[in-house]
Length: 158
Image (tube, rainbow, N blue to C red):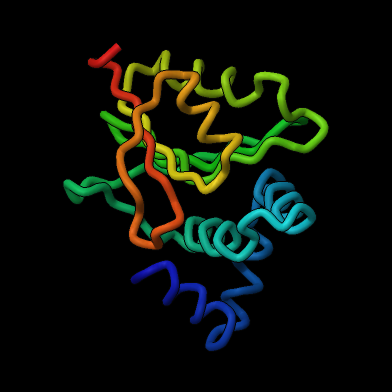
């Protein structure tokens, strides 16, 4: 079942299941949702992503292998990522305004690079584009929406 379909079912067709999913949200998920809403940062998309993961929807990579979702929330940023044995997909990355321009993205990316996996990230942000370029990510193209840019880092191309 697609993420969109799960959200439609939760919101419109099965309020009891929606309540169970809401009650099952981890404290970090609640914190991420609050920050995304407060800063108008992809709130609907993040909510759909978190609800689908909490409801048990499995995400697969291009080779039809399951990707393991994980998220991190700390005092400076939040990240939502998907990982399989060979790659990490940074789905959402948000730095709190008071910590911007302090190397938070670089620290996070350095930590991810130590895992020695291919890393991909999509962005519309000039700041993130500069940060990705600075860390050696290569431009991979423009996404279907014609606004989002794809960047990749491959440990074999260091």
